[in-house]
Image (cartoon, rainbow, N blue to C red; front, side, top):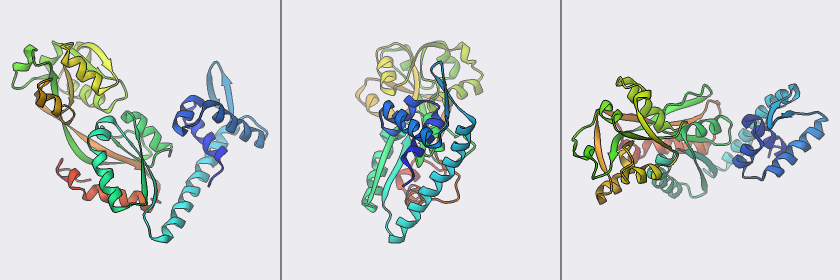
Length: 305
């Protein structure tokens, strides 16, 4: 219901990029630029300074952003409260998730939630944990499920389950004969890592540091942004990697990869993040309650949501 120009401006101001805003809004970049230009013409002032391919907010832009956030939040609250007068749980639920959660946990959860509330439409965005955090904070997503604890001051974080990580190697690798593997043993072999910004990368880097292995000691041969690419590289014998045990169960069963438990074990907490606002829509609250009661979540961890 809020002015579309204001929604577009808000996204550009948060991203400080017309290109990223266009991707978030599923619009073309010229369309985003046009909407911002219309708003600038309406106020008869520039909201952004454009220089050397970068944009920054003008003083008027900072003021507009402050009001835009309040207007958009109030608009969303009004629509949610009025729709709840019908007593139905309905409407779109914008969820973000990191790849492991999106591919191995959410499909079943969303299917069960849809059966309970057929008037809802879940819209899933898949990205790394850092991107999901930022989009929830910018209110372009209602909530996120990420592979690390959130560091964002404006988000509520709730642990939903735990996930065990293992080292994977090619079946013909000398490492495949081990019953357990230590961080120092891994450091002496070619190592394949996820990209910076990945919740998995952050968790594993911390594990090495806490185990007394400096990251500079790792024989890092590749950084890959895809879990499937990492599995393929490891299967080809290009190095070892650390991944969630749930993501390689099929390849281990087929004999394409070997999974070795870590010593000490590495278990990470998967977290749910959402904005701190006092008002929470009935739809979002219903989904949070559903996650808390889900057997799939309870069976994976002893940690309560």
